[in-house]
Amino acid sequence: MIDFFEFYLSEDCPYGDETTELLGIRGNGRLRIVSREHGVAACMDDLAAFYTDKGLEVVTFLDNGAEFNPNDVIFGAQGDLPMLFKLWRVSQTFLSLVCAIASNTRIAVELAHKVNPDVLIATSRKTHPGFRRYELKAVKTGGGQHHRNSLSDSILVTQNHFNVAGDPGNLRAMKKVELEPRTREEAFKYAPLADVLLLDHYNPGELETLVPELRSLNPQLEIGVGGIDLRMVSEYAGHVDFIVTSSLYYSKPLDLTTKIRKL
Image (cartoon, rainbow, N blue to C red; front, side):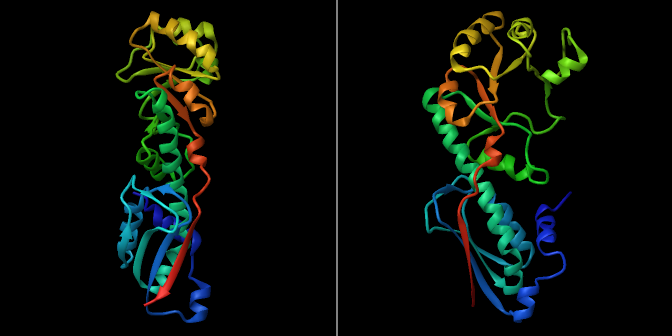
């Protein structure tokens, strides 16, 4: 299995830390990562395990889902100073990304649940290469769900599949069959046959009338919507079972800073 943190470190420090070596930095020190804004902790346990593997002592890290405030120390470790300097930037960048995803997921979920406590906020599989494991974990930490983890875990007949394969007929499978109809007519055609319909680019007013009509054809039908701006999540939450988005993966990184001191 790929050790992602080793990969991240090899990108940032492939041969050695020229600055630390030039300055002759040795001995032990302490690293602390401090937040400049409010956020939700994610994946710090994964980072802590990597630090431990590198022979460092982790003295502070927050549980997944814990909230923190400006000036809070969210992660701290001590040990070999050259190693702390090597891990500094990778660690700060990593936490700024995953905590931002968890934070914005929590905001989206809370907004949606004010309208519909049962609606799910789910993310797509459009993760960044090499970062899926942590992006998915950050979404779950923030209270979201995964629409699809990969091509291997679910069935989704998209508009491109329709364009190539044509009418799929009466599909039967061990997994739920989800369809993304190209038109309103296809939505009505496949509603009695599908387990799930994913409706893209409908506005809330259209869904208000369309969704009850589709469910009258199949009371067990689950309906989701994608391709919307998360700032409008409250307007969609009352009409569907789930909202699919990729935008949480592109959350603005949290503003973090790192302090290193010699012991």
